[in-house]
Amino acid sequence: MAEPVPPTRSRIPGSGLAKGLAVTLRTMTKKTVTEQYPDAQPDLPPRSRGVIGLFEENCTVCMLCARECPDWCIYIDSHKETIPAAAPGGRERSRNVLDRFAIDFSLCMYCGICIEVCPFDALFWSPEFEYAETDIRDLTHERDKLREWMWTVPAPPALDPGAEEPKELAAARKTADKLAAQRQAEAAETAGTAGTAETAARPGSRTEPHADEQVRAAERPTRPMGESRQQTDQPGQEGRE
Ligand code: SF4
Ligand code: SF4
Image (spheres, rainbow, N blue to C red):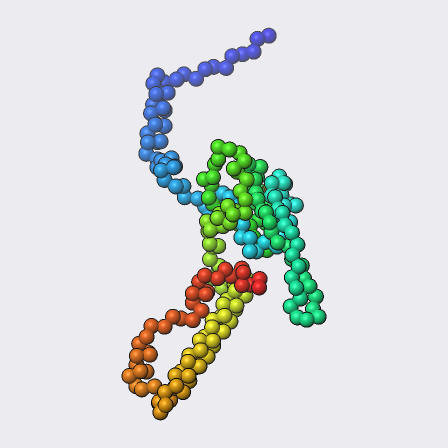
């Protein structure tokens, strides 16, 4: 027996056209989302995975990243170096010296495992993504190129109010303060030695500077000790020495 045919809905003539026009009007009034790349750079989130930067001073050639990489696209070469004993009768020490560190970005799947497992904070994500090449071999970035990417890594986000200071920062600040105090002491010692020598060279000279000399000395611009050192030093290096 034949199935009963459901009754078709009667359509108002021109309703389809009205619906289409309504969609057009809605779209026209919405804000456009088209990115004008490459004329305008996209506003990427700070944790974008663009490329990996290497801070090789922190790398101890432990090979963890290369072993954990699921694509086997990290290439590391190194050799051992013997450091003589610091004191007579002491033991010689050996350390790994990095010869090659390269990442093949034609194989990398940007999983971030290498960055997660690195125990010494030597690998970082950079949001830079404009490194397309016409030759696939150029997508293997050697250590110099990986170091260049390091300078494009954004600063870490600010700590939450009341959060404990990271121990790396505290260690770097302590080292910087120690260096500043040491330099100040050296400068004071040098100034004291120079002053004594000048006084001794002049027979009958005064031991106390004259009032106008004191004023001139006070007006002389002085460089805050340790400031430049703190600005240029890499905290990671200081902490590891
Ligand atoms: S992001 Fe993943 S695939 Fe790429 S190098 Fe690191 S571990 Fe390997
Ligand atoms: S895991 Fe970190 S420290 Fe170890 S070899 Fe890789 S980058 Fe260097």
